[in-house]
Figure 1 (cartoon, protein in one colour):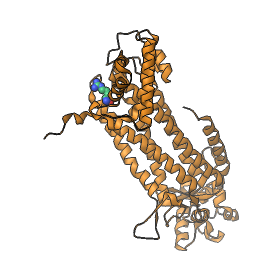
Figure 2 (cartoon, rainbow, N blue to C red; figure 1 turned 90 degrees about the horizontal axis):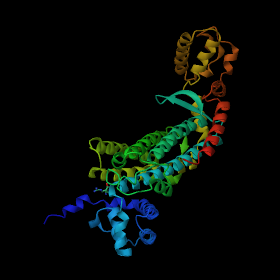
Figure 3 (cartoon, rainbow, N blue to C red; figure 1 turned 45 degrees about the horizontal axis):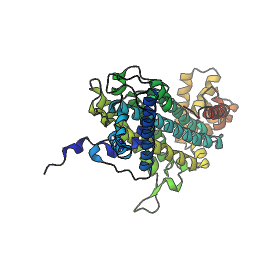
Figure 4 (cartoon, rainbow, N blue to C red; figure 1 turned 30 degrees about the horizontal axis):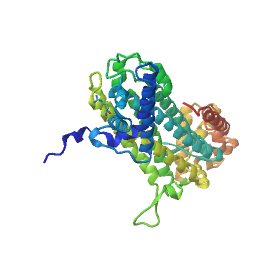
Length: 449
Ligand code: ARG
């Protein structure tokens, strides 16, 4: 026997999560129809009461979901008929599922953007708290994963604060794109009823109404925007994840992740694996995949609505869930990790990281930078051959490489190195202190969309 072919078109198992948006949209629509005299106010009241009762039913887990009715819109409408009788049929006056689903998705995207922003804020707070706690801690800064120059841990953490601040802006932009009411577009051409679209927009909290009905029912660029903002944010989180994996390894030993963010090995009892960080890094892949998915679904569609658009949902919902849970896990992980200050400081002492400062010293005494670079290269090689750090050579040893070295060269230190980097945006304690203050002010100012 052939399976029922209609199951291919069913979406209720995933679009049921739009129920709140669908009900809110229908209630606003019914109120507007009554206000405009298209239905009576008694009819509107019956519709709104029925819809509210359905909302409760769904929340209580008592709604009789019917896959044969395909999607969330048909399920709710059919249930409304059972509850309030034939008047239910009036709800769909001046409306199509095409503008209805566009509405639901826009409402959902606005809420998801708001939640992403809240998640970002919490992670930024966690980073900022840790930065503030360790304002003076010096650690190695890396390029090519080789020790490069000393930096403050706070400076390193605040780099992620900045990335997340740009992520926030991307979600704000996404919210603004979604914040346009499509209802009133009908199937594609508009509707032959005297609607008050501004009223519906106001009821549902939209800032404006769509200017073109064909665009309104057929574009999903706001979903592309959300998923692209999410992909970029996950990329940032994945880099943080990679650092946490490295930093929590025995080789680095810079942090110890709290036990709740690690798991044991099934065979090696001594291990604590950084699974949360790894999963965050891993889940970035599926978020990238969903972005490609929606772009590809949209690329060949002629105006206006095509059923392909139903494929906009699963990847998007998965992206929302993945992003929000990753932000939450990372917030907890950052807030609870133990920072191994001595390991970081000790690591900063090694790796000849003051070679640049020593070169700058020679520059201060008139040597062209390129030449100073060569001198320090030789001095570093020499130090390495002696099993020493280049900033631990004796004056006599320095002078073998250049007679511009004087006793004050011995004062060059890690602390002095970070203090010297006092340009705006640099790692000096003064600048980092300023950056921490600025970040606090930014966070306080951006509660809202
Ligand atoms: N479930 C459909 C979707 O998500 C709703 C719109 C259906 N419209 C239509 N003309 N078949 O796209």
